Length: 420
Image 1 (spheres, rainbow, N blue to C red):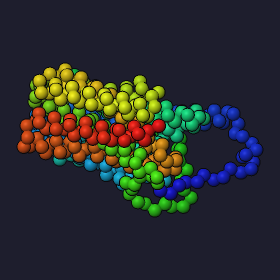
Image 2 (cartoon, rainbow, N blue to C red; image 1 turned 90 degrees about the vertical axis):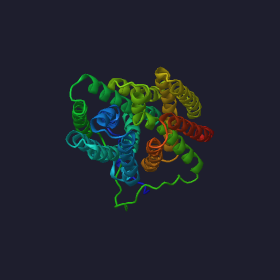
Image 3 (cartoon, rainbow, N blue to C red; image 1 turned 180 degrees about the vertical axis):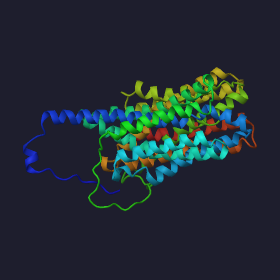
Image 4 (cartoon, one colour; image 1 turned 90 degrees about the horizontal axis):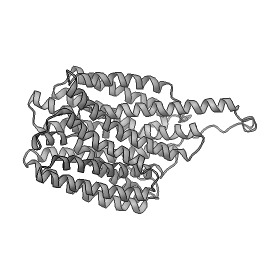
């Protein structure tokens, strides 16, 4: 990763500070930019989960099996991983704002695809494009929010608050999209049309407001050769980097369960076919993830990891027992508790990875960490879908829970040992 060196200030610039009014205006611009990028981040992540409570409708309409649902969901994960690998780090060179705008534009394309081409092939393509936009945005927006906040406040200490906000917006957006999608599908006509129209409007607004957001990266004076994202730990930080990435993988593996097969599991095993209930379940898990990051923001990274592990393990254990005894409240409640643990584990993982390098390499390292994390959102879910073709639902669910718990504990213990 080539570093970018800002031009050295002139002697005159050293002697004459910027006028106070100019500094205040600059801080206001960066403060506006922070909220503009946060809104765009929220809108894109919310759009990513709008289809979650709608899969049951598509499935009933077209008669495809649960495995097809996991294929559609996997297309999203493939898009995220491909985008992170090919372009997630490019904001370090080409700037944060252009990549945020491209991401929002890709989500608009996906929304139009959902509206105009909604058979199985169209769903796969639309979800792939959605994933491409999300992969482009996650690391870019996370880095951009931190830089905008520091420049808006004039204090490096505010970067921690921006990190909390980025994590909350990321997972909070995912929760909001599922709830909005489920509510509109339940109470408004044309459930496979209206949710996407609503997000076309939101994404257009997001694109417009980001146009006025300040850039925070100085482009290099000489062209930088393109290369894909390297899955390489920063020098001397291999243990901390891979612990953070693996913990993030385990965290998003829990979320993947609730954005793909959990709504179908509710419908087929618990006979809960209400669209709002399906969306509310996914909302509860992701909302708990977002809220826990805010409530426990003052804890050290180590304490966040430790508490996150406890909540994740306890929540998944309750969920598994509830699935065995067919107790729907326990299934949902266990998911919510596990979701709270996911939020803490995920935030600590991303914060730890971002702290390993300086600003000139942060976008690349965050992109690599998100790449590992979103593999956790995709690979285990596809495996679940394949297993469901030959194994009953309950054993598959229990096996998934055991896998995630073991992985989270092993990675979380290592992450806690490396955390501050």
